[in-house]
Length: 289
Ligand code: FPP
Ligand code: MG
Image 1 (spheres, rainbow, N blue to C red):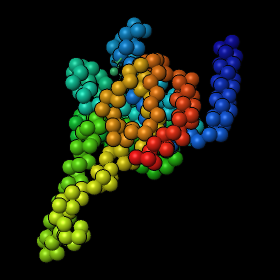
Image 2: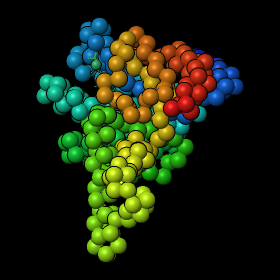
Image 3: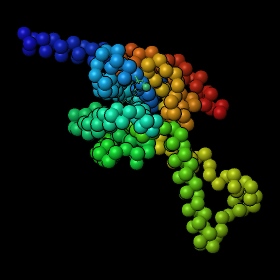
Image 4: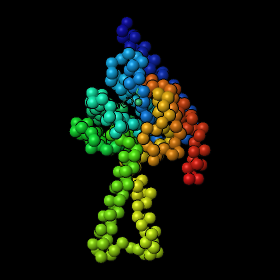
């Protein structure tokens, strides 16, 4: 009876998977997003709502994340970015931070296993943020995962951890200034001086052009991916909470009221359809800017 039950279950899920792929084929008739970003909010509220132990909400949240990644990669979305832990989250109760870090370490180690979703779909993993703020075991696990998936080329998963957008921008500006400083020092040391003639001999122009927008963009942690087309934040909150502020000027925001562990296929499809309806308008706005 149990075996019959199992095979009935298998048949059911094969049919579900087949129907999902059929729907994706229809959705693919219009352009699909290159990049989707997620703010996975509402995990603790979910645990409370379901009367689960503290911390269980984030575990169930990880399962929801795996489903979302599967949908993204099945549909052919190449870039996915998730907000896993912000620098501000370090201000939570020490026990909660520790339990989240333990969960991260366990799940990051799981990501490099052969049967993991990233290997199944050939996805390269990047950890984005100020990794120096992480404890050594988590940082080492993150570095190992980046090395282990470096040759995967069908998709990119950016995991923002110890990240805030303002920290990313400050980091990129500092790196750009340092790069220019080194360039100028090298030119001065070689006796060439820093070519005023480049700017028609105008010193003011030279100063204003010393660090350019493209320099800053090149030094962003998120330079590994194009700007997101869709940003999904669950739990009904409509704030960006210091996530991808630089990159989200022209993306399609979708904020369903469900808590992150409750996010499902219908929310995913709705977000894609919403993007497809607004795509031309957003592209026009981007070109005008
Ligand atoms: C926000 O919910 C979510 C987090 C702080 C972390 C979410 C992390 C995971 C789901 C695991 C990810 C793991 C890897 C390896 C990528 P919240 O804690 O703010 O919940 P609340 O809004 O209900 O308070
Ligand atoms: Mg929250």
